[in-house]
Length: 223
Image 1 (cartoon, helix red, strand yellow):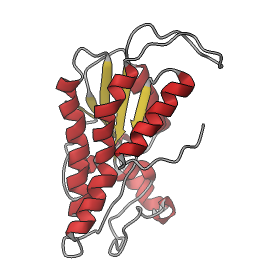
Image 2: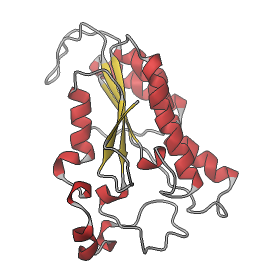
Image 3: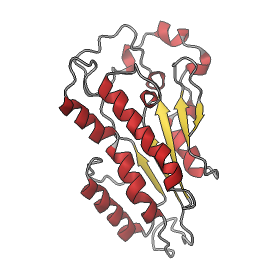
Image 4: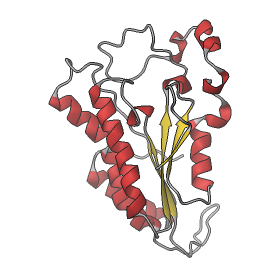
């Protein structure tokens, strides 16, 4: 893991990162968007500025990925002098947007988060036609609140703008009350899902829902 300063809502920052990747490694195979901002929990606390901030944090990253990552993934390269380097003789790649179940329905949080999460999923869906025939796939992962071990039922969310409550707030009783199909399990972790999506031979984009407790919400929705 190589730390790199990046502003996901900055076009210049995104282009600089892509240039550095190509100059250093010669290729780009996988691009993951995983930035997020909740914003205010209620409409009365929400201002246009709040909406703009959530839009930039949640939706601009997927847009820049769709716009700039595919051309970089299409570049070919010879074998280079670093560990595991291989020849890339054809263009291909995988773009993965880690969003939220809020991108598929409302009620997870305030309007800013829901609206911008829908926009992030919209970037993935619009990428279906954009990426056709390029060899580049795009997929969306939609974690639900259960995946991070949080039960928001009796928690006062007012005033929270940066993150969900910690998993330690969830009682043992609540954990055991959850149906087994909705409990977090190792093979449904975001990392495991990312690995499966990047290694999948299928080109059809999809939304992978991780242990959502939303009623009648399937684990996989074709896009």
